[in-house]
Image 1: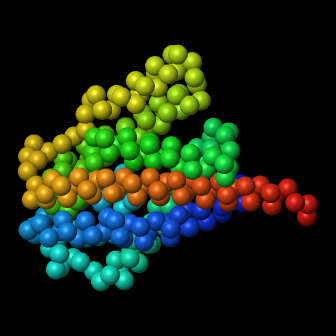
Image 2 (image 1 turned 60 degrees about the vertical axis):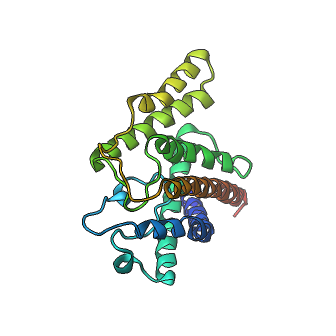
Image 3 (image 1 turned 90 degrees about the vertical axis):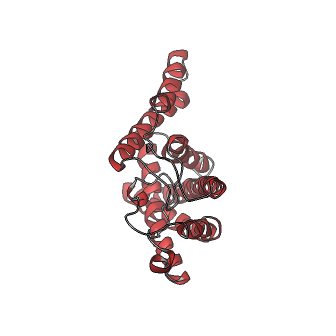
Length: 237
């Protein structure tokens, strides 16, 4: 049964990655390419090294002329990245489901996916919104530490709010959700950026919307795949 679930999770993640790639190509890739025109060369911030708060687009930092790949290569790289990330998201939801002994089904799969989005993407994005090339960033290690702590605390807070509905649990859950934002995310001393604020805001919103669709697709497809796996396991040999 576990092998069936594992394969179902991989299939769901792959399909979700395929589903979201054209949406991402239309909505976020043009904004990334536009931002790259504001870069002046030299050492760039390693935005992609941060654990993915969003779908990680396959793009290189540097001058647009030197770094921009062809359209087909860019789409192919993005597709490959999304398939890998989708599989990881799907396995993460499956692990949470098995650990909590709460099944993911076709009826609740999208909700599981949106819960993953809230924990892994939305909560960290409140303090560290999605970044475009040429935007300033704080120390990478500090950002990673804050990101990991935020994800862990948000997961604990959401668990208390959803599965432990007593008053102390609700208070504790809210406290865990708020704690990383009360501490505050690390930011650079100099926040000046050549990227227009409107472009940065548009990218942040587009990235969050695409990521929410990605997570919901992963959860929904995982629920469908797991339902089929359960039905297959009950069929007599």
